[in-house]
Picture 1 (spheres, rainbow over the protein chains, first blue to last red):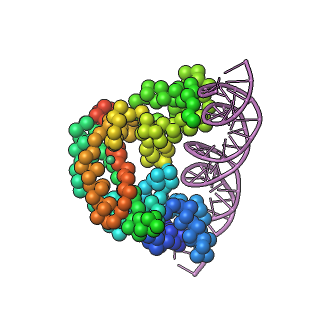
Picture 2: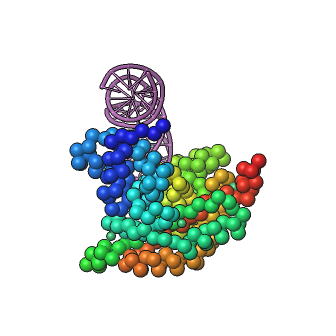
Picture 3: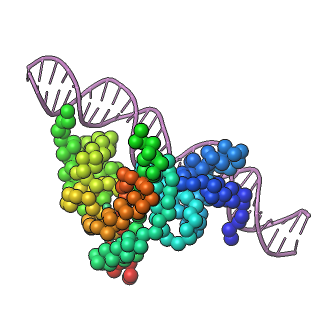
Length: 131
Length: 131
DNA sequence: AGGCTATTGATAATGATTGTCAAAACCACG
DNA sequence: CGTGGTTTTGACAATCATTATCAATAGCCT
Ligand SMILES: [Zn+2]
Ligand SMILES: [Zn+2]
Ligand SMILES: [Zn+2]
Ligand SMILES: [Zn+2]
């Protein structure tokens, strides 16, 4: 069976206390900064588990790193992410859901899944960049 | 200035001769298999260049590898990829383009880019899997 | 042909992620 | 409450893709 450890809970809470997406390495550093002695491998395992159980969303950063986030929306959704400060907005994407299903079946594909992320500069970072 | 070398041309041709997306490592192996003595670092550089110049498309595989493909469509487009055999179909995504722009501006985001890929099982692999 | 400079490639370095495995922590169960 | 069988942890090694080095090579212009 699956056991409950303070390590898993610590990762869950640290993820909840983080705004945008964060890497396993960064979350581990963050935990260490607060005095937690949790191991790096454990953070990787916990994040992987949370992701599989649907308690966390994950995506690949443009440079190939796995990033995680505890999302408030429970169902399937996507993200609008500021590539400068990391601010993240959860967004529904009905048009995309139907489009993806349709284009897949049109070409005879089954078990279609999709990766849909929007990256940009948030209003704040846009203002700062204009200076 | 930029120089023409047989290495760059070899990478371009090898990419043209490949159906789906392929990693730098795999392309290097493929080239070696045909007797080419091209270096791995050179393959990485060539693919990176081709991608920047828009002569090749690139995407991150679900497990974080960078994959490349020489697409026939010149403009902006997306892909429907068989996660089993790699068969790739280039697809337009007008609904998604407008949706992405709209959702970004609605939240005050600028310079919006998007990652949109559909993974599934092609008709052939679906049939084989059913056995 | 000669020289200047971009490119190559063998190799080392980096960095994220996963594997290893003995020690520590859980959790029924008695 | 102990105890024991199992699961989980974590320090460390091992992988694996990608990038940095840098001397040697090869385009290209005159
Ligand atoms: Zn921002
Ligand atoms: Zn979706
Ligand atoms: Zn297929
Ligand atoms: Zn698009």
